[in-house]
Image (cartoon, rainbow, N blue to C red; front, side):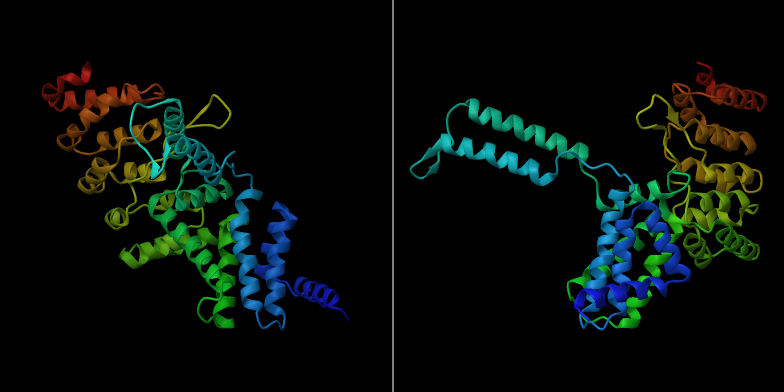
Length: 378
């Protein structure tokens, strides 16, 4: 039997032996593109072979799977990459150096002539392009995850950090194995493959019901005490924005307020966004601010502290929730939010915001606090 036949047999064997998580991921990748599924299958085939370099070959395929996924889900690519831009600059620079060349190298003196002026213009264009198009690797990964998310909502800060760190860790591990860095045991490698499979499946085929059951159990555990470990387990249990919304919608106790604040929740309200290739604006509801409205009467001090730290937003749904909080807490606290509300009235997309702020002004007037903040009515 020739080498090609052996390879085909190994591939068929790996495909036949697939079950559970592996079968689920393979089928999910087929739905995106057969090339992705074949890359994954190639990794499994390498692992099950007798090739002494099988782990490195499998790791190479898995790293390719991670890196090529964005292309197959329609993520935008720049028409010109950084290398091309730098090469264009280099060609322009050669012309400048040639023009100023002397016996001892370029002679930088005199006025700016047309050659140097053209290069400086190109240099300015390059830095303008770079500032507009540069994305950190973390931001690129977040964009991919958001494209994969069924709801496509903005991600909460601490949860997105956990997702990105896991992705970066997996990519770094498989890259290390592919380049033969350090020694890696088969058991450790197979565990990492399992982690990658679970991570990708949580986005490609989310098990929403199972996730919600886990979240319910964690919330019930928090009826007694909410500590750092419990919040970390909640973060790990949330696999997408649907889980995130479900968690906050189910909370009925103020015990979660301080621990969630300490884990940097309540700091990233979803922005107002222009829907791509349309004239429409998208403004998502924020599960965190809805939770704050429900808890305002139960623990007004910590809710006020949290609301005071929420960054300014152009999302009117978030602003309306903050006004609802102001209406529910003691007016002596809420009056400190007046200067911010005055700025919000200048937003173009008001919805019910002016009416809500008007109700808040009446609330202050009834509490005889309006005299100290008469400029609200301007």
